[in-house]
Image (cartoon, rainbow, N blue to C red; front, side):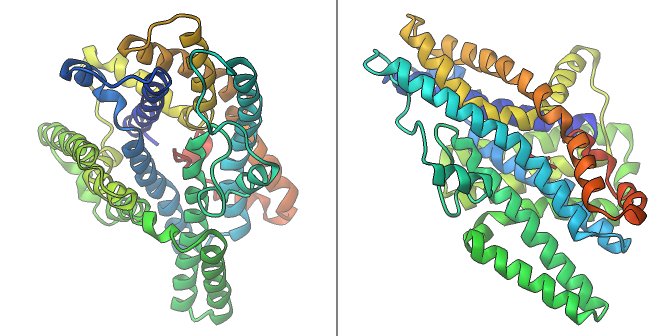
Length: 387
C-alpha cells in the first residue's frame, strides 16, 4: 500500500481516537459542546463513525481485491486465506481484550465515588470475552467492556469469510466444479447464519473497495493522467470525501446509510490515490509522512485506544484538569502515544506469527507456492482497518 493510502488510514484512525477522547471528556464532565466557536474547534473530533466506513472501503480494496487476483491466477487457498485474515485480527484483539480487562478493573477501583466517573460499560462476562474472541461481537454479543471500538472487527472478519466464499462459489461455477461451488456456497450461508444476516447491511461499503480494485485492474489508463490533471482530480476527490463525511455527520443517517454515503464519497479518492501516490509540496510533506506513519500501526491504535482513553481521561479530570477543548486534544495526543508500545509488542510481529502458522499448517511441498501467494502489501497491515 502506498504512502497516500497509508496516510488516509492514519487520519481515519486519529479521527476515531479524537471522537472518543472528546466524548469521554465532555460526557464525564456533563458538559455541552458550548458556543459555535467551540463546536468549530471540535469539528475534527466529530467523524469517528464515518472513519470506520472509510476503513471498510480500504479493507475491501486490499483484501477483496487480493481474493479476486488469486482466484484469477488459480492460486487461492482457503486455508492460507483464513490463516492470514484470522492472524491479522486475532492476536492484536486478544491483547486488546487483556488490556481492556486490566484498564476497566483499574477504572472501577479508582473512580467509585470520584467526582468524574468512567462510563458504565466497564467490565464484561466471560461469555462476552469468548464471543469477542470468536469475532462475533455486534452479531451475537456486544463489544467487550469499555472497548466499544471492537464492534467493527466482527463485521470485518465475516466480510472476509462471506466475500471469499461467494467469490469462490462463482469461480467454481464458472469452471463447472460443482462440488467446490456447493462447499463455498455452504460456507457463505453458514457464515451469515453464524453472525447474522445484518452483516449484509454494512457490506456494501466494503464492496465499494473491491470495486476500486477491479476498476484499477480494468482501467490502467488511470495512471497516465498528466501531473496537472492528477493534482486537480486528487484535490477535487479529497473535497468530495470531506463533504461526504460532513454530510453524514450533519444528517446522522442510520449506520448502513452512513457507511454507504461515506464509501461513495471516499471511493474516487481511494481510486486515484491507488494509482498515483502524489509527492506533496515540501511544506506538507512532513504532515503526510506523519499520517502515513500512523497508518502503519493504525490497527493497534484502533483496538487499544478506548480503554486507555477512559482510564487516562477520567484520571486527569479527577486530578483537576479542566474539561474542555484543550483537554480533549491533549487526551487524544496522550492516548495515541500510550498505544504505540503495544504496536511493537503485538502488531509488529504479525508477519512472523503468520509465517509460523503457515509453516505449521501447510504441507512442506506446498510452502514455497503458498508463501509466494502472500501479497507484499500485507507485511505491514488491514484494514481499520485490517488489510
